[in-house]
Image (cartoon, rainbow, N blue to C red; front, side):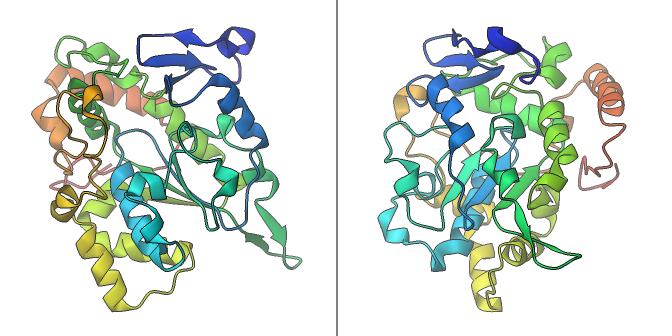
Length: 314
């Protein structure tokens, strides 16, 4: 469903199960947000120092959240926040937390929303003319994307352990739905395309999950430069070490094992953190079908994707 075209029908909250509801074409968690709050984001006041991490689900969100939090430790009081979720909360989920307008600057937010539901202030205040030829951007968005085959497999395994998910499915038996699975209300294709085609409206850094796996230090350096954080080599090395998959799985502030157990069959948000795991799950038929859909849907989007670390080809 295209939220920009669905009209009044999509503006009605539709209950999906005991945990989820659909609103304006997107799926949200009950008890964590409301349709009224999602609408209120259209009036959410943006600050120049705000930083947003935007991802499609299962694209390295928790990983990048930890990296940005570590980079910004010099400007945020880490003692105030028990874990990364509290330090960088979800924009669309505010229930149980103080009003976000009361948070001190710089505010850090994570979100799976597309531009349609994001605060328009991110565009309206995107920058100011500093000369006849240049625009100075303020609020920064870090967008992380992952190849859709690994994304689908990661979400499949993630959904098996989560009682609250709407899109739980048997991968082998339902391969025809894989490229179209509604995760957070939109398909991978819709999410990536909307953010990419509207990139000129924002101050945005695109990062690939696969590039982060291959060279984490370079990814950290790119984020530092984008956020205008001048960290020395020792500080960057410390962040890289803290952000390795091995260390994050053991870090109670970063591994999300603090999520209530009544929502999980197994409290695991981090599984493998690899590239190319789709080859262990996709059948030949699934892969051929996916390649055809990918070719058609992404023909006008000049993004390069790494499907496995052996070939590193688009």
